[in-house]
Each structure stands twice: as C-alpha cells, then as structure tokens.
Image (cartoon, rainbow, N blue to C red; front, side):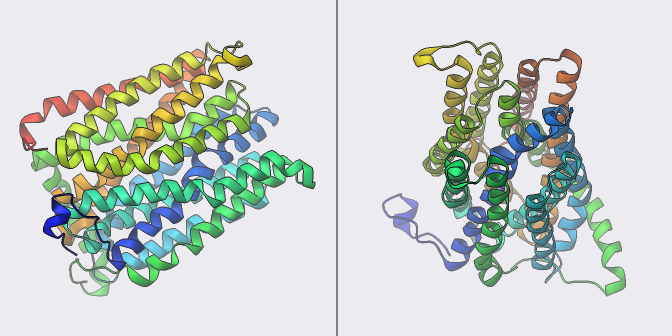
Length: 438
C-alpha cells in the first residue's frame, strides 16, 4: 500500500488499494445521513413540525443534538478501548451502524415532534459511534504517508455521495412532488427512508473488504471490561503527558465544535429567519459540490504548507463565515434581483463552507492518526471523539442559551466565533510543541 516515487513527487495519480477504496466508500455511504438528516432536509422538517406544535424548533434541535453528543462522548473511550482488541472493532462498528440505520428508517414513519427528536438523537448516536470506529480503521487500511490523501478522498467522495442520488432525489421530491400528488411531508419521509437504504447499501464493501490489522490480544472474557477501563486511564495519561497531542486535541475541541455547530444549526437558523426551504436545500447542494474538489485540494496543500497551517487557515475562514451569518439576520429585506439579502448571504456562505468543511475534517483526522500508535488507534480515536463530541455539546448548547437569553438567532450564530478564537489561541500557545514542518 506504499506510494511509488512518482506518486510522492506528484507526477502520477495515486493508485488506491481495494481496502482503501472500500474504506472511502463508507464516507460515501454515511454522507447521505450527514446531508439529509443533520444539515439539509430533516432539520427544516423538524423545526417546522416543532414550531407548528408551539415549540421553538431550533431551540429543541440544539438540545437534541447536544444530548446525542453527550451519550457518544461518555461511551467513546471505552468503545475505542474495546475496539482495539483483535476482532472487536468490526463487531462494534456493526452495532452502531445498525442503530443509526434503524432509527433513521424509523424516523420516516413518525410525525410527532418529540418522537422525531428522540429518533434523531438515537440515530445520531449510531452515526457518530460508527464514524468513531471507521476513523480508527484508517491505520488498518493505509500507511502513514498516505493518510492525508486517503482521508481527503474519503471526505471528497463523501460529499459527492451525499449530494448525488439521495440529495438530488430529495430536492426533486420536495420541489416537484406536488405535481405527482406527493406533498412536502411525504416527500421528506421518503427522503429519510432513502437515506437509510443508501447508507446500508453502500456500507457493504466496508463489511467485506476492511479488516482490523492492528490491535492487542483479547484478555480472558471475564477480564475484558476491566482491562478496557484500565487501558482508558493509561491512554488518558499518555495524552496529557504528550504536549503535542494534548495541545492539538484541546484546540480541536473548540474548532471542530464550531464546524459541527455550523453544520447542525445552519438550516434550522435559516428556517427561523423565514428562508425558503427549497432555496436553502439548493444552496447546500452547492456546498456538497464545492466540497468535493476542495477536500482533495486541501489535502494537497497540506503536503506543501503543513497540516497545522491549513487548519489555521480554515479556522480563520470559519470566523468570517460566522460574522457573515450574523449579518444574515439583518438582511430579510429585498436585495439584488428581488431576492432578500439573507438568501443571497446564505448562498455565499454555502460556497464558503464548501471550500473548508471537508478539508479541515479530513486533515484533522489524518494528522491525529499519524501521531498515535496504530495498535491503539481505536482507543486514541475514542478520546479524539470525546473531545469532538463534548465540543459538539458546547456549540449547540451555546447557540440555544444565547437564543434563550437574547431571543435573537443572529447573536447565537455570532457566539460561535468564540469557539474558533479559542482554538487559535491554543494552537498559538502550544506552537513550540509542534514540529516546524507541520
């Protein structure tokens, strides 16, 4: 699975192994969930259902997302430790995968806002848990010098996967469904069901071709849990003692929270401002299409300028994204070409997010994977997930609290700037612990 000399010099295309292709395919598979359930269709649907029931849709969406993240964050280190035992990683992946697909499918058959929220939270736990284990398989399918590239390809094809058949079908159903007797609600339910089917179908190559290469021997059955918990404590100490890892994951805690909050709250925020559902979905389609080449381009630039430099650049762009989002709240009046300024800004933001969203996540994953021992990748990624998931609690909660105190969603978006600023401060404070080439 190594690179040829030509590949290292950028003179030839990188040839992917069967394992690498199948690993990348899971990004393609689960991206339908990330797009339809987390970002585009389902949040708008839930917000409208909740608002129609006299509830604040974006407020409860923030609460539900935070609750799911808390569950995953509490479980992640132990799940990661268990997955490092030879033969356990694929089994745990299957468990979370089934939970995610099952409750996604179930969400297509209920219409009460509380059940929709509970179903979404449980499916989100399944999605996040499977992604934790999927990330830890990176060390099993490729070599360290190829990780940036393979991780970048994963996110790139994930965006194409999420923006092709399931997303385009969803847009077509919502936009033109009335002509065929399919109302908006039914169109969204079909889209949710299609998400579950897409996710399940394209995960098959992962199940057949991706296998655990690194790990530790399983202890006696009665000692598995005890050994896993002991290993969690030992790894936690390793992370805190290794200053490079510590400063990096601490900064990651803040900036990935900002990234996740932008993903999870964008359409709910737009719906609260009264933006047209179809316009928002089409704008997010543009995000997916822009993200495909930019994720690969981001990985290429990281090899030239260093992973941390590209992460810093992406954080700075997200600062600008939040500021532009704040001004959306004041742009409801008619602007250019008879379109409200808020709609115009939403389209601009869709393009801006597309240029960095996949890139910052791909480089974050591969940069971390290179720092950790491959035989304990599950456990280390479990802690990585803790930082990411507990961060994902903070962002939506910050959004909800700011909205509750001020009553203004625009200030909620602006408050996310604090997360990105904190990340930049931490990366600056820990710069002496990072290698000059990074």
